Image 1 (tube, rainbow, N blue to C red):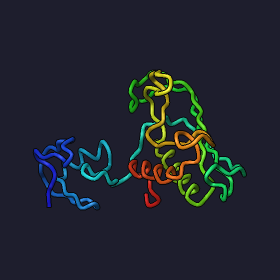
Image 2 (tube, rainbow, N blue to C red):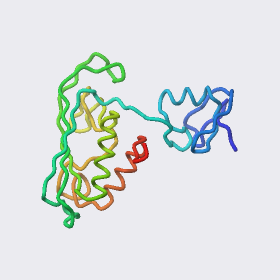
Image 3 (cartoon, one colour):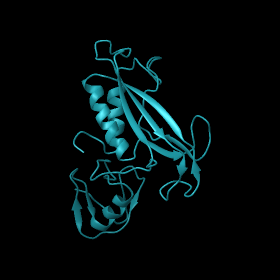
Length: 195
């Protein structure tokens, strides 16, 4: 087996990993020298080779946000046999960026977002995963808004949400693959039913 460390790079060639000491083998079976993997885990607790998580990853979402959940009896397109839909409301008051943000000490504006899930078994599972991701500060971050181009804005953080109840797969329903895709996006951030 390959031991990653000293003057080697991961198979994609993206991250050189410095120095060899004591060998550590992760649950995913990839091996590293202890100082190398300790250094890497300070950035992100995931295997640099296969990206499987080892520990809990916390993001940079502002701490002052609120996530609320409401139930509605109207079914979403593509889920007509379900039990209505779930409405998720996110609200962040204005605040000041912390040391983990791009411009510490700079202000950011308030924002509110609304998203929708089908009230079916898989939709309920995704809701639980999104709640975990929200508590780990993974759903939003601060950066440049893709919509307005403004800096120091609260933005989505690569976990896609359906922000319309209709309109098709771009931002709404029906979209038969959405629940699977969002679970994969959550898994890549270390959020699974097991974690």
